[in-house]
Image 1: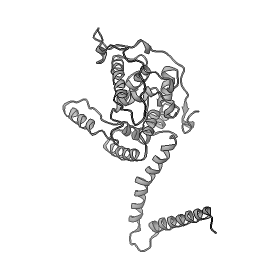
Image 2: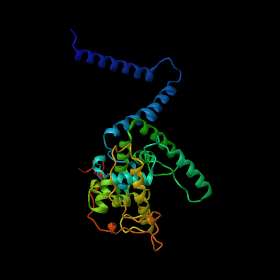
Image 3: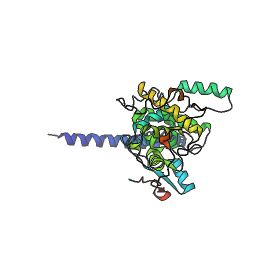
Image 4: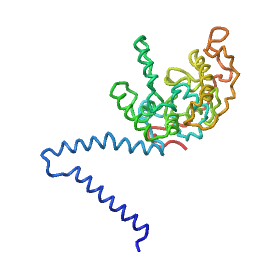
Length: 310
């Protein structure tokens, strides 16, 4: 009597033999005048579809060794600060602050916010100052796989990778990956390195005010400062506090959290400050966010960039 284990082994052997014959026939048919045409098409199919799908599926369960921007930064500056942590070790306030700042419809779209794209196109027709409409999913695809150059080819590849990521990853994985690979200035990548570098604590211990300050400098962390923040970042932080409250109130993070997380800062800011203008006409700076110097976070040299520190 054939056991269940033997049956499974026979099935796996039959599948393996079929795949070998199939791959051999695709590459080595002898009845063609121009076999290089078929081989080129097979190589393109593997390179443009099979390989990206395989890598994205691996990254669904494992952290990346590094990203192109991390590698370029390490080559230029010698080291980067980075430590990948799971979503459970990142403050929910930071998750909601980033959703409020970057992509309020994150849980509702499939990778592209067409309403935001339409608004951006109309704005760019009227103004010389261009406005983007990239979603968190698009930024994850860009930061994870692509260089920082700006051209239409890169945008096309980014859109293609965004479709694959949305199809193969849950939303929780997308936001976790984004928060771990986004640059937060001073060669700091990811929420853990940013929290330790700017506030001297782990990403899990960030409070609401620290979270909105980090979110306020995206997507230009080298242009704007978390510590010693100027009027723009201070005013944007004020606005984000109320938008984070809206994220909780309207369940805009429902694809990440199934429960409501209370916001301890409710009522600490006068509603008249929502626009960022105080009684003196300028942005209100929270006393809780005084600039403080903290010891540097862990460094990853170019030689060890493929191994995040524990």
